[in-house]
Image (cartoon, rainbow, N blue to C red; front, side):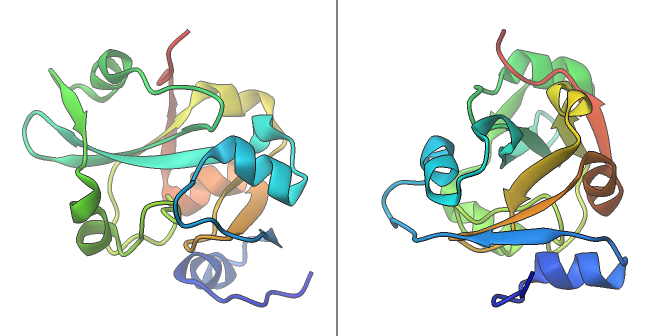
Amino acid sequence: MAKAIKTNVLRHLDAQRIPYETKEYPVDDENFDGKLVAAKTGLDARMIYKTLVLTGDRGAHLVCVIPVEKELDLKAVARATGHKSVSMLPVKELLPLTGYLRGGCSPIGMKKPFPTYVDESARALERVSVSAGVRGCQVILSVGDLMAACQGSFAALCRA
């Protein structure tokens, strides 16, 4: 598939020779809902994952990648990552820290690598979709390739 947008994510995947597809869609700067992304791309919402950046109790940053239809469980994240507590990174800190804007944050190709955890539900999937690093573009790749690209670990991260 032609790649109209060339983002850090896509350059990173190209450099690692990881195969992928992209899906572009019209963006609404006010609404970053993953279910809306599913509707606009025609992708199954169960394969679309969102990227959340958190801060642990000792000030370390970490990345969680979870299904768009689920909600992050902060206590589960803390348990899985060895922190006493974790909190969401304030939106204003996202761009300077990761190089990505809200609604376009990807676990692949951040300014610097952070420990990355992918919800264990991804194990049951063949392929997943995450942001390609900009609002309006998703990258679709195998779960194994996602794990390799972001050096991720599987963990239980979501509310039941």
